[in-house]
Image (cartoon, rainbow over all chains, first blue to last red; front, side, top):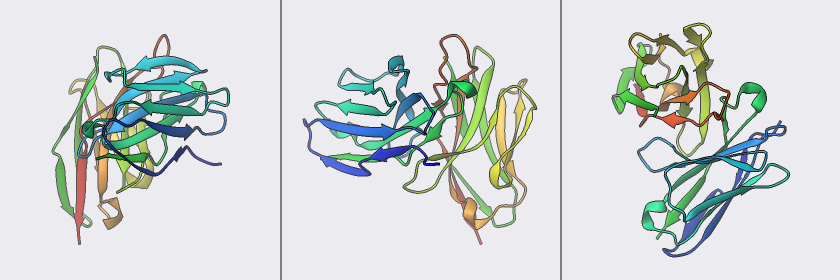
Length: 114
Length: 117
């Protein structure tokens, strides 16, 4: 079975631009979560979606938004990019049958803002 | 609010030596606890999890961890380190399922494990 997939793998953007990151969950998983991992730190929770509804939001500015599609894939959007947005963005999927607590992570998208 | 503290940002051991990575948590509700491993330029892989069953949890690659409520600790151990264990390790906590909990993870800062030949 395919794991969580993310695209693109790497991305370079300029300050002020907009970026869209994509995630496809494991087949059968209906929940997707997004995390930001700045170099040298642990991942920080950004959003969680279950059944296409936002179920949790971390302490991130409104420049960050996300959505989940009917096929349970998800997009993370970041507007007005800042240098500090440079990070590895991780997507994780989970199943309600496991209480959502067992999250499976994708390989991440490495975003560099110059 | 939940939090995790990993003691020691870097741990260095010799091949064949005991590995001990420390994690302490803070949670107002009974937690679920996890250890993840991250190899360079990769995502996170689940090593093991504590979900309120047995307090001694065995995971993949010979790792295990013990939940000690009195010490609010969940330290990761491996009896004999292998060169392939060199990676960054993250401890994480989440609420137990139910109610409004959808398994949001709160991670520690990570511990980089170096294994010397």
